[in-house]
Image (cartoon, rainbow, N blue to C red):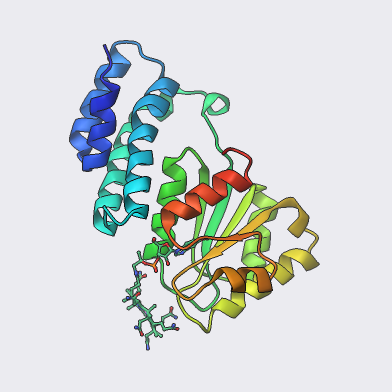
Length: 212
Ligand code: B1M
């Protein structure tokens, strides 16, 4: 009998060996991979998101939890047809042009991935044109822009403008975040949303992708 509670607990504790072991066990017992993801892995990560938001867990612990979840996902993913994977929407995420900070952005990406979203992480110093190219290529629901410098917040505005100019803006929701970015700024530059932290960004992306 698959122990989903222990699996979720392993994710919360960041114990990737335990999560891998329990996942293998469940697979061996013939449990559906999609059930393992939904009942065990994502459930654990949901708790992590809520605790992080409440200030009860910190960045390194969240990263460990995401790593534990990944250990389980790597076992079940090859067993699922791509079309059967639960997808909560597709996101492209990147740190905007001129900005090399990526710790927070990667955390946001991990949270989204852990919630079942298909995340394409473009990296850092991503120009508006590169974002536009990625939208054409990947056809995401959400474009997520991160900036940590007050000077590079302007690149967020430029990215939205280029998406508009290239006729891509209507096809995606744009969300922004990063330490200097505010909700007012998001409204000012015409973004669809802003979130203060990784767990809230995940919730916002799910909501805008129509999955929450
Ligand atoms: Co830089 N840096 N840095 N830096 N750095 C800051 C941001 C700074 C506040 C430090 C300071 O002066 N007190 C300051 C910015 C001042 C400003 O403009 N307001 C600063 C500066 C000035 C610089 C340089 C210019 C320094 C220099 O060279 N003179 C330079 C710029 C380089 C460049 O980008 N072009 C620089 C370089 C660097 C390092 C390379 C050394 C390194 C980055 C390493 C890396 O990322 N791989 C670095 C670091 C580590 C920092 C600090 C210390 C920590 C940032 C961090 O990772 N925080 C930072 C000071 C600080 O914040 N205490 C600082 C942890 C991370 C989990 O939080 O990124 O805020 P954060 O992400 C949060 C939220 O913001 C949010 O969720 C995350 C988790 O909850 N979030 C989103 C982030 N993206 C989001 C997207 C969303 C939603 C939420 O939706 C899409």
